[in-house]
Image 1 (cartoon, rainbow, N blue to C red):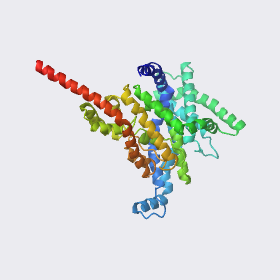
Image 2: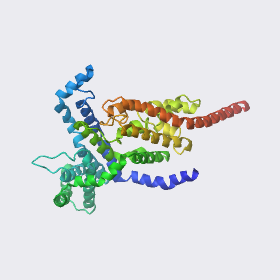
Image 3: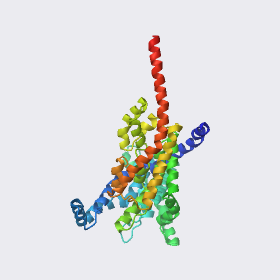
Image 4: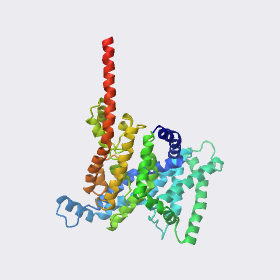
Length: 435
């Protein structure tokens, strides 16, 4: 174990930290975080437009909801179309802003340049209208690539002083707009001809080819081995003291959006949903109560005989309800603690396996909406599946499963702490008698 911890600390962690803090990865992660409010609002409107009740329901609320949605369907779908169906525009803009800022370039110019770069190859006008085919999750990889390209081109020109400089005294906003003129021109002059040539010789657009190229990876991530690998990597990093969920979910963001978009399209078409691995699947099933699925462990702490563990439980229980568990991760501690590290890694992997098969065999409804990840798990799981009850039952089952995994390790750790606390009390008493 000591050799493993040494290898983890000296060999693996520096590499992963370097990847996680790399500016392009960080920009991509921040881009998806910035787009999250639009996903949430868009998902709410989709659920309102597609009530979880049949047309012949006798439920008073269900009948009223269904009639309202049926009457105002087009109006309810407009906010969805202006958010989820053009989500890539928000992501491309946010990635460009963040990446440009990391290079000390004008972030607003970078954001707009990034947006234009995607539109050049992903949404070329047809009959005077911009198609939205690849403005949702299907265009996310194209948006990432074009954002990176446009900002790197902007950085390249800036570093070589290839720019239009205005005299001193010109307002900064005007100077910035002229400074962006050459990057805009060269982005158009390179990306647009490439897009035309690709379509001419292949018959496919760049987003179609990009999606086809990433298809095996998208499919692989949505399998049980792909999910378990992501879960293991996130939690082994946490065990080493690095916020593994932030790193792994930053990379998984495009896959989450693609799967969510696919399920939403199938919902609108009235077809069975197919995608499993989405952000709500991670938040409400795999990491119930936060990374490591520690909500059950927090409840065990509340009933502990150890003063230390009971105190941690009291502090950690409220954040844990909202899937925040840094108090228990660092208070226990779980970091670099093999005794708690084993169930910390094992519990979410078992949860992922059970939840995967529950969704794979349609025992539980699949995700069609994007609630905030801080929503308490039973409510969040129901919200994400258009208020189906099955997900809440699955959450409760996973709570007991993760509790059963933690329990023997908790009891051993509790015993150790009780002996330490007893020893400390004895030392204090002896010191008092001596005095």
